[in-house]
Image 1 (cartoon, one colour):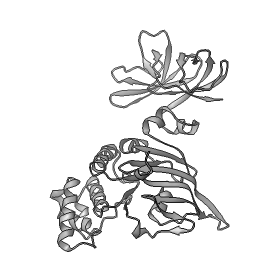
Image 2 (cartoon, helix red, strand yellow; image 1 turned 180 degrees about the vertical axis):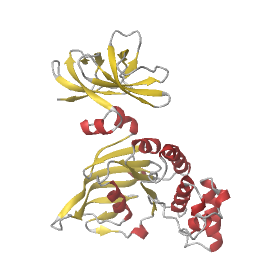
Image 3 (cartoon, one colour; image 1 turned 135 degrees about the horizontal axis):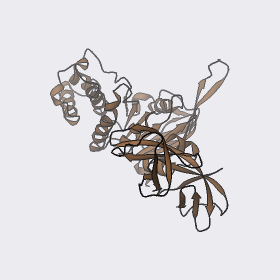
Length: 356
């Protein structure tokens, strides 16, 4: 891709924190690389303590780089020898708790970051952003009078109003009800896309990440393990960690066959073109919950061990004849009892294997 289109580029970033015992330092971020294009929405996904929020702080300019570089619009803003102050980076931030000023109404909150404009221009622009986030009728309301989702949109409008090059969002949905998170993530994505805003958020929630982001980086131990589209992360994980972390899945034993196939207990699966396994080699095969289908006519039977009701579907945990367990999403009108045996068949389009 044309380098001129790359808005954010992080190369071999390393950030150190003083160790908890006060003796030396520990690597909070190590050898991190990622690129974000103009208008793209990226997400750093990982468990607490993996370093994802530290990366945001480094992009903002609040954490110095021990080594590596951060580029914004092809300009180095952080390196061991260069550090552009936060207020000169044209980066907006939406905090986890939204950080709205309780004594200012919605319009005043959005206008607060527009100090470089005249009073009249500030009001005009703040009203424009209220329209863009569908809150034009809430200009005179105060933060405590708004729902969590409305507060989130005000915080987003306030961050976007000064027209920064990049918006950073730190766990933007964590304070909201679980039922609201995915819907609001979709709303936020629409707002960012309509306004061609480049954004990077951090979260520990896969559903949020997949609902909002074009590219997701799974982080562990200060590193981005895989930076890819949600589809590729799910169907083509680069290692076992990603395969375990993303979605629901289990590993079953497989044996590579001639003709680019792998044999598992449930039958044979076609391997991809780039598979480097040799016939006779034992591998572990990743089976997702959508790789197994319920089929009453199938001769292959599995016992229902557990089931979780998900509205339109049940998530069944099934025991095969060997004792191995697999997962299956089954339409909820197929309500089978624990201990019952049901027919299943393979429906895997993307076969992922790892050497034992």
